[in-house]
Length: 128
Picture 1 (cartoon, rainbow, N blue to C red):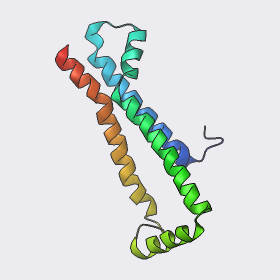
Picture 2: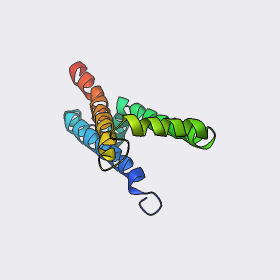
Picture 3: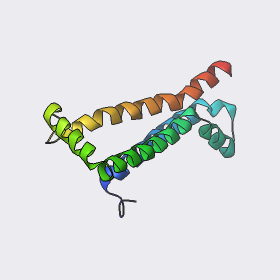
Picture 4: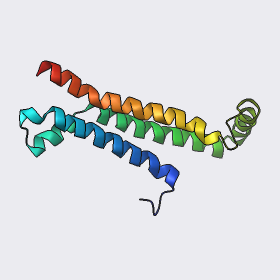
């Protein structure tokens, strides 16, 4: 993937994969006493609410990308006004600290994805 996608585009995919791996690892440990087959474990993993949330993240990112493309390509005056306003009012808009501001919601979204993915196991442990 790194051959055709820049690091800023492939890093979220990698982090999402790590979150999925951790959630699956913990799920397998929690379901160990149920002696499930590999197919059953995969099915349980795919039923996780985290899978639905991750799909929503992907769809939301695509919709946001389309909206940004429209604003930048079609409504250039609006894009100029937004950029000017951001430069004047947001100290993190450009410069060396701009990436840190984007990292905050990214970490929060990844943490929320992890907690949502674990949600199924907590309910399953209580009922089973």
